Image 1 (cartoon, one colour):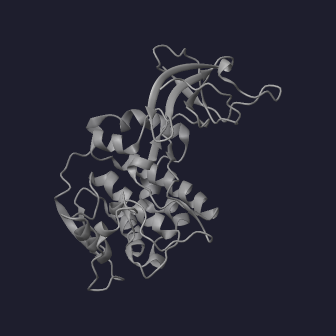
Image 2 (tube, one colour; image 1 turned 30 degrees about the vertical axis):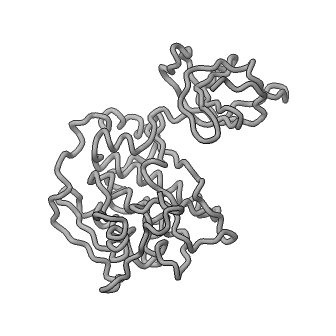
Length: 316
């Protein structure tokens, strides 16, 4: 696909760099807010150096690019002219594949940041509905960004009683066709993600979609020995079958596990990156060694099995 050839008329959110765009690579970068217009003039391709191709999707290609005068680094799409913030460390899912699981400091810091970000969405009546590692981006200073709002809905206007999202991270009420759901479905997904970051696997597994759905509805899962009591308490408080009983996101940052392990400032977060990216600091214990079996007391003894495979349009 050829490079884009039209004007870029929006206000982009960008990254700045002091290094040249040699061989399509950025050697070092720092975060900035936005690339301002100069004298109200619209941006065009003559203002931008095009670098390597980053990827492509359904709507066009994405290129790494740099504004010539300020040397801001941007992501440039073809046809749809959106200047996107560059997340140089990629998806959280790739880091989980690399390390299998995170230590307490890294996992707690990400949970702290995500709980604040999701709470901000909820304050603006937005339910993301698809919180998972593939939709979390990692930036250069250790901060995380939530991506892919394609499944999000705005409350109260949007319909919220159809299964939508990724099965492993779906809350029980999302799979119930007789009920609607609210913001707390994102709290459940964050609980699943917290479990996964500490254990290297999701809490609810099975040989089929229907079996996974049944285990989610029964709200029973195993906590390995490697998970501390504080971390286990937070996970269990987010993975409650009754939405009203889940911990409010506003209370997550003050939870003892986060207070003891999370880095609350970007300065400390950046300083911790070296330890986080050292494989020797990550637990390698198998998640199959379990010492605690959690059953949500609010769950009923029996639960119906949902035929998730009958609704492929809504689940990824």
